[in-house]
Image (cartoon, rainbow, N blue to C red; front, side, top):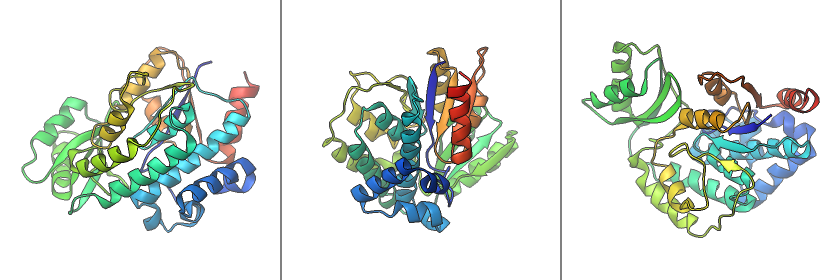
Amino acid sequence: MKIGFLFPGQGSQYVGMGKDLYEKYEEVRNIYDRVENLTGVDVKKISFEGPEEELNQTKNTQLCILTMSLAILEILNKNGVKAEMSVGLSLGEYSALIYSGILNFEDGVKLVQKRGEYMQNLVPDGEWLMSAILGMGEDEVEEVCSKIQNGFAVPVNFNCPGQIVISGDKDGIKEAENIAKQYGARRVIELKTSGPFHTIKLQKASDELRKELDKIKFNNGDSKVIKNIDAEVYTENDDMKDILAKHIISPVRFSKSLENMIKLGVDTFIEIGPGKTLSGFAKKIKTDKEIRIFNVTDVETLKNVLYQVLEKN
């Protein structure tokens, strides 16, 4: 069995996430306390009680999702469930980098806090949206975006076969949604995000984050991490600071990342954090291999993973 961890990003959050884990496990409580001491943010209140509008603010969303993922990792590590490689969707890449040891806990948490603040505060004026287009291929979505007459929209998240997220301003996204439907898109879903993420419109946030990254010491990891930017494994020759600064303004190659993890031998995926969106993406990857897919988002799913991975093997 070769395990790959999957770490979710923005859009997976919901009020109450992590609460039952916090109440049951001391290790989880310790992680929430550590994050709050480092950041001064009441992650517990925002995660467990909301309101939703506050949780959905990018600066809060990113920190709350990261904290939940790191807390679950503590329980899995304690029980000997370890991954040989991992990947995160957008924000989730930081969870993966912390898990691998490429980033230490304190630096990773503080970077995500800054990343969230910059991505919220340095969004250009205007109304910005992200939408998932279902039932169309990459070339088709590229063509849809090229036909927009008013506004701005580009493909940014290549999640899995038949699901691509576009990002842009309200006029551009609305027009792209209409064109996509005319082209035969099965469905269009607007996401719970608040900025033109993974587009050049966040160049200012990328520049500011680069200044923070210059202060960070990166380590050789204990496990492999797949990069969003090109779906390849991080190596010691990579310019981590440059990659993570560009990460904010570059497309996420998640579908290709999953394909490459399977090629590298992963046969068991475990999604760690709120929701089970990434598990759904993994199920849509075409492969001849037998792949097992789990998610850990609460006490019940955690117990299931510990049983399936440890006791049954």
